[in-house]
Length: 355
Image (cartoon, rainbow, N blue to C red):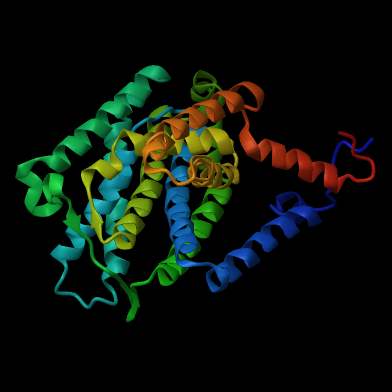
């Protein structure tokens, strides 16, 4: 019976893609992503861009909840901060050349989101679990409330929203979905790679130690103050990057786009995909984005395109999402990522694998 993989040197032990099946899976996926814009229609490109933007935010939630064990229901606020900061800084530095403006604005939006994340993360030093989730939820409501106020309307547009700038990278104007797809895909892959390598470092191992048992981690010399706030900052920075792309992708942003529904969608994608795993957000985002589309197709076929019956599509989506979450929490708490790992391990050990 095969119960392990032989590693004859340190390089093999450190290698992420340590067998042929993983290499085929990852490189095949990258090849499909490269081919996709040449064969996909406009609606498919729209869905792909939305998936990429959402993926970056879910990776941020995974850093905090999946790896550090700190529950948050307010990450939609960090996405909002990244989006609105992008618009504000773009207007503030409008005198600079357009080609270098995103290279300045996006990092600033990420930094602002990280700083707010540190502030929101302060309650994690005293509370955790449900109480921390409520604290982050309250922070999300506060951010949305401030965005809608007339006092900040000159910068945020208030309840009516605000127009967003067009991304221009060194003279390359990203004014189509296919061009934005390139930027979003590159940044999404980069964030995934960064998350994978983060948890091979001392900081990432400290996060995991806090998740497993924070009191024991503190006894071992891990500063809970430092690493919990660092986890919040990194997680919020990911969401800030997602918000910046959100602002560049959509022609106009509204406060209602960043309300509780977005935060719950991020958490749902993480639970379905698999918490604490690099590919978990990928699988989760794919399911969360595709299920509503499949329901629309199924409801359209079942109702014959009747507009009167189409109003039931929304409740059906909510029911299906609820069933998905309950099913995965009860039957497969580690999500689709665990199922995929099981399949890849069986393929790697064939013909000795069983089950």
